Image (cartoon, rainbow, N blue to C red; front, side, top):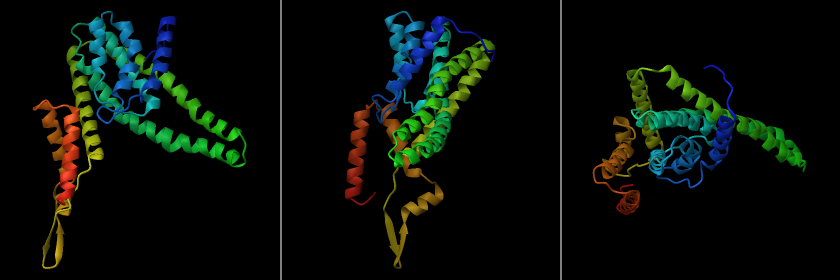
Amino acid sequence: MNKRKYSKEEKKFFREMFWYSFLLENSYNYERQQALGYAVGMWPAIKRFYSTKKERAEALTRHMQIFNTTPHLVSTITGISSALEKEASMNPKFQVDTINNIKVSLMGPLAGIGDSFFWGTLRIIAAAVGLPLAQQGNILGPILFLFVFNVPHLLLRYYGGVFGYSLGTSILTDISESNIFHKISKAATIVGLMVIGAMSAQMVQLNTKISFDFNDTAFKLQDYIDQIFPLLLPLLYTLFMFWLLKSKKKGSMFLLGVTILFGLLGSLVGLF
């Protein structure tokens, strides 16, 4: 990717993208997690690249899909999405589904890198620098902690957006054949589905307490299920939720009510 100088308007756009990225976890919820904050973070790009109210509404709605990543690195993904939105605004034949596919495929890997670096490494280093002074009652303790942690954070947050936008632009420039872009979109879709599957396996917890006694020996059903198909019950319940959403067109509040009722009844009768 060749280095190039950016215009004043582009630099202004990068600054706006940087400041808006801090809104990522505003209105965090368990249905779509950081989706609303991400959509707001895309506003600097959307208002620049789309001129009509309808186009802007469609773009904002597009970014209301479930999203979750390390906040410190979100601007990299925002930058790539902004470059793709720019292309979508200029090219009527552009496949807009590609934008979300690439976004979802990136959120998992960047979350893994970001959590390991910021929470697992940088935070510990910053605490090691500031804690001895803080224990002595020195005001420099918390100041140094915040300084050591936030200088790399703010630099990566700002220049991550610049890098992401440049990367997205170079990808669109270098790839001229639609079938190649289609392959990239398909690969991103596969990776995105893998990320959603991994999130479901990690976040959905469902175990049964059903057991049978044979000759004074207890046989726990959950142990046999785990031997045959680990995490089978969470998978089945996730597919049941998907069926309600896709086939029965039920809303999130209905699914939440079903989940609460299912958990209460299951606990009362001794299933879970």
